[in-house]
Image (tube, rainbow, N blue to C red):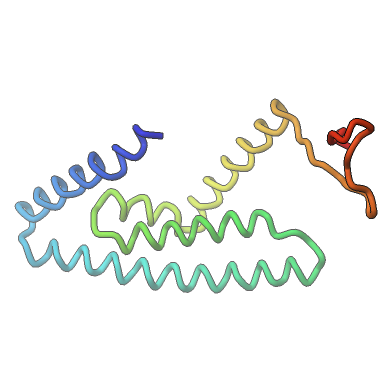
Length: 146
């Protein structure tokens, strides 16, 4: 976890800054600023349109009595993609576009589905059910898991 925090808050911003400086040298300062502002505006627009589309799909699933689990994962990807596009930088913009475009987002959601399926198969799935009026305590006052 510490490595992830160090990467996100020191290494990634340093790489973003390096890329922006090199892009500024290649195409100039103002075009680089326009690229950053343009991707931020595009991120907000795409996140809004894709978010509304997914929101309506989630409502449709709920109306049909289904749990909209994968639409929720899609919605999280759209939210994260919009945040990444709004954040200045070329790496975050690339990751944000990857999360916002439906074909690449479907690929990521499928990978998440496979990972969760494999994880549930190996770790098992356990949940506790309490009967109404039952305290859940066993004979010695401990929870027996039923």
